[in-house]
Image 1 (spheres, one colour):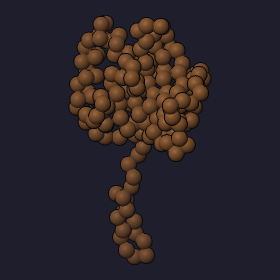
Image 2: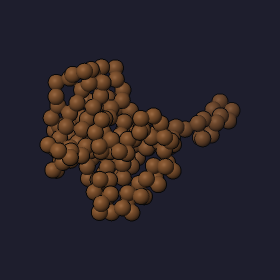
Image 3: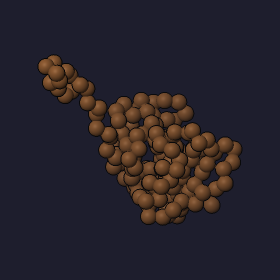
Image 4: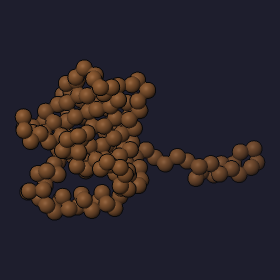
Length: 161
């Protein structure tokens, strides 16, 4: 709250909260820098910490999604939901951000230092991907609609190729 003195009158003006800064853990998981699949076999303590964090800081929604209880950002975009065990229909970790497909695609390309390979839109969806390592691929998905304002992206773990 900021107090202003204007024309002899004190006025209280609410100040918008600062934009959420990027959440390092969510960013690392969504960009394949960290992997809960690897933690599961090699570092179960980290996996348990992630599970505890999700339970404490998020509200369970439908279909495996969790909504943050407070403002969070990944790649500079506000997080709408996280899917701690999936990317679309596959196994992985993904986030839904309040941003357009093109904005997220550009930010991912800049962050990864490589462009994503996009498929021709089908079934009303736009998708892109970039293989990061064996059995790890960054996936990007959004509705094929110029008015769409949410985009899903994350790290997909391929078990068979």
